[in-house]
Length: 276
Image 1 (spheres, rainbow, N blue to C red):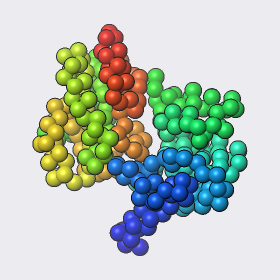
Image 2 (cartoon, helix red, strand yellow):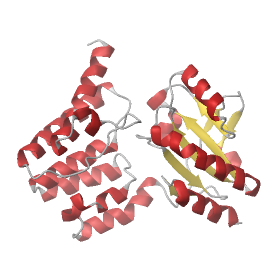
Image 3 (cartoon, one colour):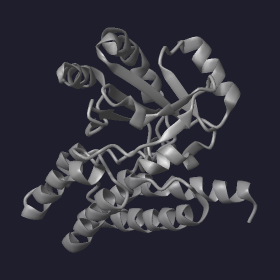
């Protein structure tokens, strides 16, 4: 099957599951500004729709396992919600566990949404949520990597001991990534003299697109890009399946926070730069 046909098939199948679950149009329900799977915004009472969403989500998984380097944790969350709507307790916990443990699903606040209310009572739910940061790697030494920056210099995470490092996985077509850049600029300005180092790992594949954006945005921190997209070795090391994804490593090289943005990001950067 030609690559273009395979990609078209993958996108077509991808559009089915969230739309089947929520009744939204496929383009609204399935994709956000980053091109990633967006979680459904509401749970329908129609059992038939949950069956349709489940079937489509399992098709997504089959297609992406065969043809894509990007395996999204959100698909497992959609399967979890579908089983939840069908009243299959065993299956929805099984897929919730898989989302966290296999795909490193990090947005556990999603499971506190009202549409997952039926999950929140059993002790198993609380244990999984509490274990999630450890599963992601919080409290453990950060996985070391070495990348070549756009200016040709080398950057090694292990060489940054003594600094607070913010690892930012992003790409130009990611709307939330671009929206966060002014906040990152302010944080970089205010904390770089206090030991903050930001390394941006771009998952772009088009050099001109990235170059044009960097000229416009004038980002003052270090940027690396392999132009391998979702096959990027550092992204795979950290099991990145959606952007933006931010990781904060303290002066000892320990992962302390992940996926924090906005005012919360400023707060934790200030906290970590105060530590000695």
